[in-house]
Image (cartoon, rainbow, N blue to C red; front, side):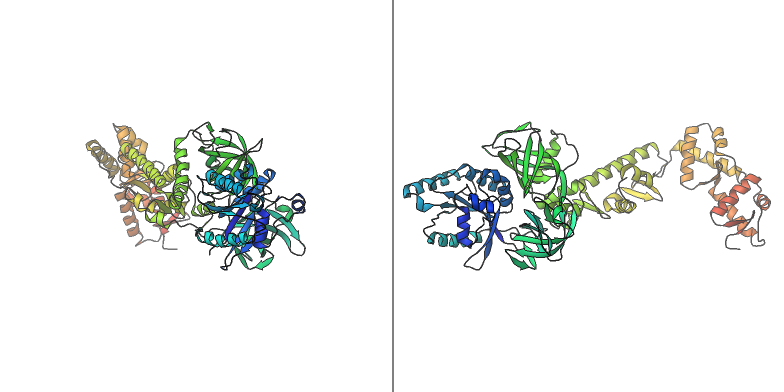
Length: 622
């Protein structure tokens, strides 16, 4: 769904902005009694212009007095087209410049200059001001823009303006992205019989009756009970429109100017981005206290400059601003940066990231990361966020729109591990560390089949759930290098190969256990007999892992072949007997009592036999 175009009307105090809007729309945007009395626009005024071609646009009249610059920055955020109003008798004034600079900061790309009060000056003065404008704005988005004379005595000048508006608005290419709903609150009140009402200009997305949204930074859920725009009830309303929302789930006292109504936002005290200083601004030093104006909110914070100690006028740099309170943000939000005291406009910031961790200001890798976010398109920005460990939901929240990771996954620039998304660089880093660990392990433990998979998870993937860990091990890239052998992980190309000495030791151990048969001796007994204890331990562990010998209990082992023989003997015994006691087992195996008991316990564990009051029966018998 498309959205309405928003026209911003800016300029110096008493240059005629409100009058122009009144002639174009029939609406007086000076609505506050104080504004009427003082003849200036203190707060932001809104109206709608209906064009002869049937189309419409919203007009925002922003304040022209220096004291109300906060409101001006609130009005310009979200503006698509700028009317810069300059009175012919005064020409370009300080607030004219500041308003133009703020429009530039907020990314306005098109506009026109309206030279008002044409009837009050001579032709020579008009041409002088017109030339002044052409020169002053020659390196900006207003270069070669329309410059129209406006006279209150000549209504034809307003008709000409309307025609030009139609032509100019056709040139505007509105963003086509389907973004989440967001509206910065500029007014809150209680309507009798309705409850809390908030007003603002919809910055993005669509709002509908019964929508469930959130209010930030409180992060409290609300429901939309009613929608109005310019005193008309609406079922839905889209970006670019002036909007009044009757909301439930919150009291008016809980909402403030500067809060944000949105589907979802990132809430943070730390923002990072590109700070661009005006040529006329003062230098910004590291740790300087500043004011940040985003939407209708002003926040105080300190600047941390990456890679340098200061930013000079007209230059730019990547910065972090540590704020004194939380704010709600989206990626690429733009804000005005002003000096804390004295209050002067320094420049603008485009938000690129947020980070609660402390970062070294000289960290070149982090500086490169911010630069990539600033320069690259959405696809690559999404990849950068995946690289920072963001979930798909968190990326969508930060970008303010539903994003897909399908292309990223298809190109194998990221991997989906159960529901966790891991960037390929991080995936490779984890896999390489596991492979390196297994290589060292195999080198030192050449007769071990591998490392218990639980140990690998604890060492390298502690934050993974069991499902995510299983999914990781099932990944084709992992399985090209690592395989699961029973409960052990080993390198895919690893094979156990006994050298000459190890083969000799294997035969020695076979000899010991073959001779003991069913009369079991302890592991320590055989360790005492061997001449090479270290090699004995190594080969013995290998033989146990490979199933050549079986551990019973009390430090005693039996050859797997003899254990199987004991099963055959006892099953044959039960063909003619219902039960077997320990003494019968001793006689059957020709073994000592302790050995017979250990073997019976192993048969119980294998569910061959069952212990019933000191005698055994076959497990399938009562």
